[in-house]
Length: 446
Image (cartoon, rainbow, N blue to C red; front, side, top):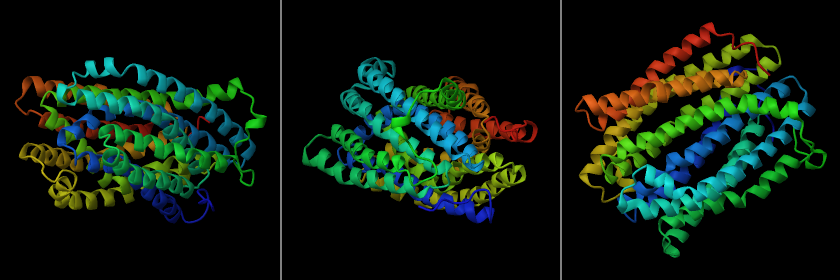
């Protein structure tokens, strides 16, 4: 597939061309959670809570995949922009080595630590069994998840976002087919939702490997010539680990936030799960631009085009600001109908909790996007440690303390949690913007 030229031509057009496939890709990625929620919601609203409780735990593993993907994009886009395709290909093989290593560690640890994790979260007894079953099966999802994530990062770094879209679309369609079969056809309930997710990703892995190993492309994988190079491995880890560790701690913060939500009952947990998936769906067009921005930053810095790298951020901010306003208006109009779509017999408590949460996330959207765009700049230029510090500050330095203060010293109830999300994004976005102006990110660390 023809790659988008990030270093020449009309910049706005190139950003949109590359973002559009990612919008479609993110829609399909969101369908995993949406389809699971839709079918599991037919069982009961508490079953939705079982999935919602364990989701941030899985995010902890996803954060490592995303961190590795951030390092992948930064390194490969830099060498691709400099037209050093051999170097880019060598790094792609090394990255896959780390990918397999992390998959093995995460699968074993998640599978055997399910009980201690759920006990720590003080999981309500009415959803404990379903939460345990779902989490244990999802431990085997990491193989497919990592492979799809790294595949998309390699292709996107080369300006090709369409290939990742096709793979993700195929896996999502398979998940949509398998979900009702496993959940209702085989009467497996929540277990069936987990099995459908795992199997749908595993099926596309041979396609991914075939695509990466084809030699008729600038960057490809050659396992036969693989030899682990310590210097390259260190560089990958130096760029990937700050982002991965930052996202891991951020996801861990969401696990802690779940402890506060669970305090308000299993229905509140279900409401958070539905609202979070709806919010992700609303923000798909916006996040797509943040996802492509590191490629434009990395390739243009690799080609010594600093002005064009800055313009990439400016155009992304303009487009995402316009989209944020549109999403807020659309989301406010569609809150209640979308809740009934997932849980037709939703209780008044579920409706109230979910509506309030979605309102605050829509309000938070523009500030959250601002933060994501700035992190994309730092990641694309190889300054991943800046994104790491910002992510730690956003959750552990601002959000969690505010949640504690609101819960202990005010009568806001669960609204205090949603307000903390808004406040943390406003503060950290402002700090990130100051760093963009003052910190020498334009000097790539690749």
